[in-house]
Length: 267
Image (cartoon, helix red, strand yellow):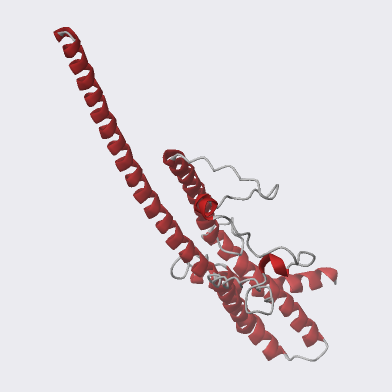
């Protein structure tokens, strides 16, 4: 072999060595990137699990109990000699032994094979090895989808059960006005009872001026505290007490005045 051939062979070996080093460096970098992606995905999944636990506690959902351990299947009764029945214990196959006896040479070569569910005794094909990068990308997409659904759940949890699309001020006005209207109906009942002599004038005036407005005010206060509070908001939302007091102590007397005007108009 000439010197030129030795030189060409040396250059080829050097190029292969450099290519091998580059491939090893690229593979090492790819493994580092995969490990970093796995760590980041693990942190995301842990944070998602903690956030879901917080949401569950906020809406009053307890964690499901652990699943019970599976019960092992019952074993077949023995043949009477203290040995397991195996295949010999199967009905209609009394002449078949539990395990076939193989010669010594064939026993060393016998390997367990996966049985396909389609046909007995047919070896199933091995599953193709999955690409870690593809699996991580699928897991990342699932984590993104879980984040999106978690954000939607948080938005829903930040809305109260009572009039969820209304602003807090509009909700408070509606609640106090509704309680005042209900108290106004009671005022009309008391007026009718006073007309037939069941309620005297002093009791009627006390209920109209103080009793029913106070009942309407505290009723609206309790309703806002029970159904007007979002599940994910810490503390107590504003209940607009001065506004509620003003509405309730105006609606009830106004209902009585409206009744008097209606009676006079009919006369």
